[in-house]
Amino acid sequence: MNHLAQTIKALSDPIRLRIILLLQAEGELCVCDLMEVLGLPQSTVSRHLAYLKRSCWVDTRREGLWMHYKLSEESCAICKELLLTLKNHASRLPEAVSDQKSLSDLLKVKSSCS
Image (cartoon, rainbow, N blue to C red; front, top):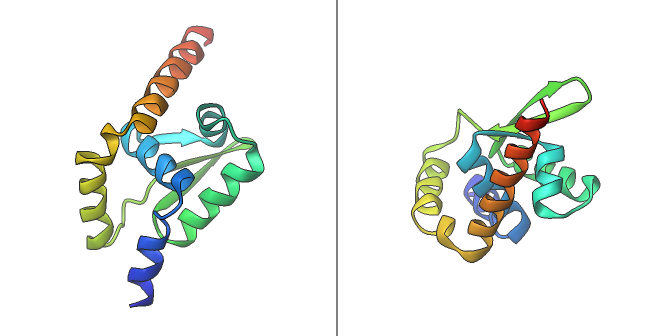
């Protein structure tokens, strides 16, 4: 019961929900990308990502100074079902659409600078 409560509670915060939707759409993102899209300081984004990691929603990978996050590949059945529901419904919310547009624009700029 505690795992279920923690799993669902992780999605109760709008910032964490936005992070999950961005990771679901893109696959893997670094903290710097999430900071830019969400318009939040590194400390806030990292705090929410740590919460998601403790709740088994995300996995991490270090590359130099930056941590990269992606949805956990070993998600429990409940998480997989919730992710499917989010993809089908929450991804259409105005905030999610705006975040997706911002991320797309950011990634285009980053790729043109490489």
